[in-house]
Image (cartoon, rainbow, N blue to C red; front, side):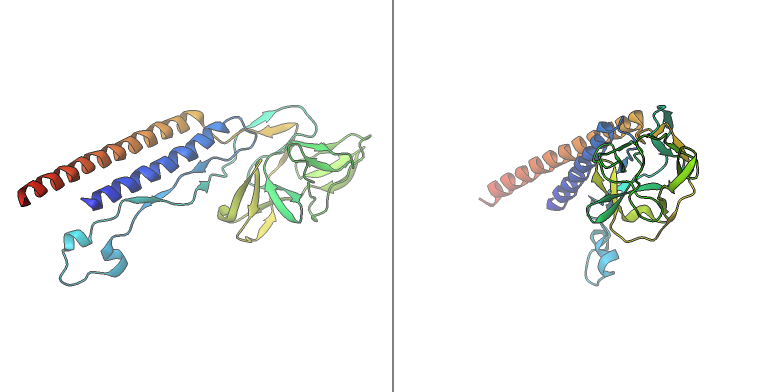
Length: 252
């Protein structure tokens, strides 16, 4: 009986966590270049899987699992659709890759191409005003009085002369990237990076990678699973209470 309580509680917790993840996705359905998170879960290993088959035990019980438990979220980095804005400092990557920006002493990565110039005429992110880096890891400095253009290879030109090239990189394995808020990612696994071949589009922004209808379906499913596990908890609690009451009266 207590085993059933634990299994139902684990299922309720996992689906509560899933609802939180989906709710965050829905809240960012209009956020530029946002990447949706996937709530992952796995079944708890059985006693047999963990310790092997033992003697003098019930094989049926040994083969029973312990419900499910939540795993760390996985970010879906699939490129989203692009939307034309016509603004010179709006850039988007058509395919895999990340812009590099500097935050303090660390390098962060983003696909949010909303850029602007700060008071020092440095190319910075629109939200946090973090300096954008070129392919050599240097802060990009521009002349505010000259026109600004970027070609598909990421080369920045002013008045027809190439100034520098955007530091667009990609990772063979993006599992080590962790969200830091405001569309920033840090590489916690020190994964090797390489120059990304993704074409750079000027006057364009990447839309959110969230499909609202798909996320609503996920939310409804998670809510139903959560309620189902709560109902099972209540049923098992009532059954346990009834068993204790009747056993107590019989023994008395």
